[in-house]
Image (cartoon, rainbow, N blue to C red; front, side):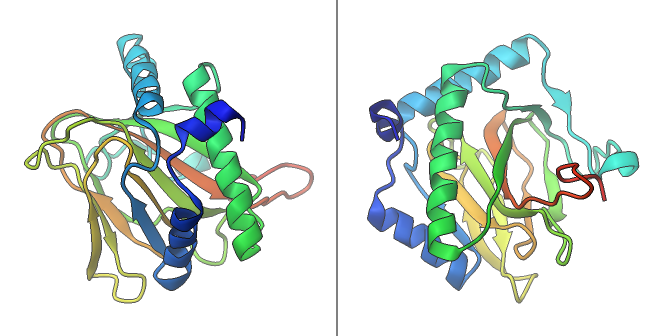
Length: 221
């Protein structure tokens, strides 16, 4: 990391060990204050500018020809990170560093990281789902960074993580508070976003393996 990148991150070796242990032992990790408030503010400013320019697009479900809009399942609007701002570049650099650390610790073979801003307007939610399917998972580890400061206790919008074995049992409920970072195994941890009562800002991301076929990286399945 550069000095500026190191200042953006709050994690240390002990917290990194806790993250790795969480992924190994139960399939998920949640840490408060994982990123510095200044970087969260910069990312939030980026997202608000995109929203004002009407650059956020309604999120779909499914892949390829099966992609469809389903407001009864998912109600967020998204914009993929594209490194157009310093804040985005710093965040993606930090995720690249985290990717390397996870690969060293777990021999995970993570190849790249992709992420998008996600805005949930009041009333929006995302029904319980997996981010990937076992046996054909290219998304290996899912991440969420929250960007709302001072989220109220009655604001809703929590992410619920369910147990990998007892998938109806709630394992954790994550408040969408700025700087909180969650990650979990994409094909093992079902999760949902509860209805929010105010605009909810976050970055959803995925560490991926290389699923190249015929020279094309990660083709549609």
